[in-house]
Length: 325
Image 1 (cartoon, helix red, strand yellow):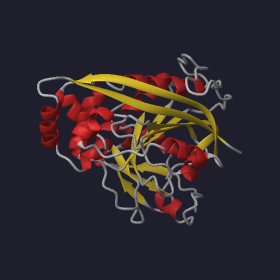
Image 2: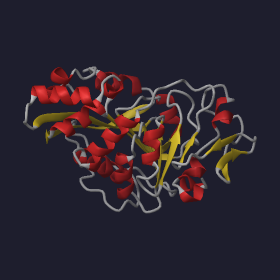
Image 3: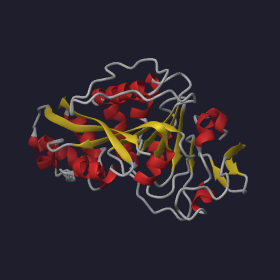
């Protein structure tokens, strides 16, 4: 596939050859320039490394050194597409877009730029830097949240959707015309240029703090969303959902301290009343989907709430950070 027909064409300037990045010894500094260019349906670097663009419109920048990771299955991604497409998480997508817009010079809308429901501190927009805004989401899944953020940023802004699931990346590549979908292992060196990302999103995704700091601009914004105690509590017992760590957010603050300064903390509760199928989608789109089938989950929903709708509370923490140094 020609990258001109995908969002890869607009994000190509920020991508780098993973073989050249890996040759640096794993510290993220480029062994060579590492810039990629389109050569038909392949992305190539000056050193001759090539990476095919899949028919789904995404590029796989994982190398033989990458870990073997089981990404979300087709069933999990379909459940996520159905659930998010029904706008159940609209309050979260809207807030991510507001925070990103408030941080980005020239954004078309930046409502409530000073709101901080969690800490009482003011969230201040960054200084203008005069380049095209780049939003990157780790573990982007279908690209739903990233597309919402791009809609609030200046017209020239571009988005990089990162995941390891080919099923998710195929959908992310179609989520917005200015999203480029890329596969790489977030735990290793990122095939992304230094200091090019304006807004970095992490919604329930693994974190590589060293690489996050390296790719984020000095005036950039890191937004991390984590589950709060009580998240989906109504489903956990009846459906046997995979458990969560209640102190995850507190430990995150400690681990980011040497690279990022806290800018804002908000807590967001989303009350939902779901049909049986929607409750199954919500359970299936998370880590439980790696261990359970939709049929099994549907049987358990019907047993716990026979013929009734399911009341569920989504409890989230939204943390914003600025780079130190």
